[in-house]
Image (cartoon, rainbow, N blue to C red; front, top):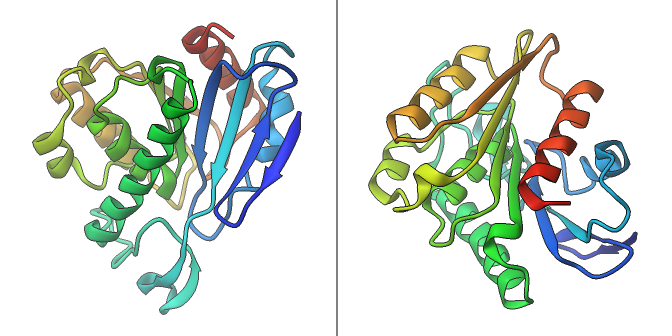
Length: 225
C-alpha cells in the first residue's frame, strides 16, 4: 500500500486497482493517523482494492476542555449524558465528509462500494452523513459513539436509509461515551426504520483486536473484498 499524507487527510492506496473505499473519522483530539495502523489487522485480501481515507478534523476551541484548541469535528458544550454540542459545527463537518464522498464517486468508486466509519466524535458525524447521504452507501460503522443530531437526521433522512447496513459497537466499560448513549443511538436507528447490528465488548473508550477483526469481516461482506 502507498500512503498519501495531505494537510487535510491521510490516504492509503491498495496495491492494485481501486474498487472500493473506507472513509474513517477519528475521535476528539486525535487525527487521521490515529486509525491508519489498524489496516493490516482488518485482514482484507491484498487484492481487495480498498482505498482508506482518514480525514483530519479541523483545529478549534473545545468548550468542555477549557476552550483549548484541538482537532475536533464539532464543539462539545457540556459533557452530561445529553451531550450538548454545537450542532452547526457538526453539520459543517458532515458537509465536508459528504464532499469527500462525492469526490470518491467522481473518481469512479460507486457509492455502494463506500463504507463510512466513525469513532466517538467521528461517529456522530458519520451518523449524520451516512443517514442523510443522497447516495446509498455500502455501510456505516459507528464505534463507541452517540447520535448527537437525531432530530436533524429525522428531518433529512434519506429515502433509502432503511436499506443501509449499520454496525454499532461499544465498550461496556466506556467512561467517556457511556454505553447508554450507544444504546440510545441504536433505538433511534430502529425508530427510523433501520435494522442495525449491535455489538458490545469488555473494553473502555477504545478499539480491541477482536473488534477490529470483526470489522474486517464486516467490511469484506459489504464491499465484496
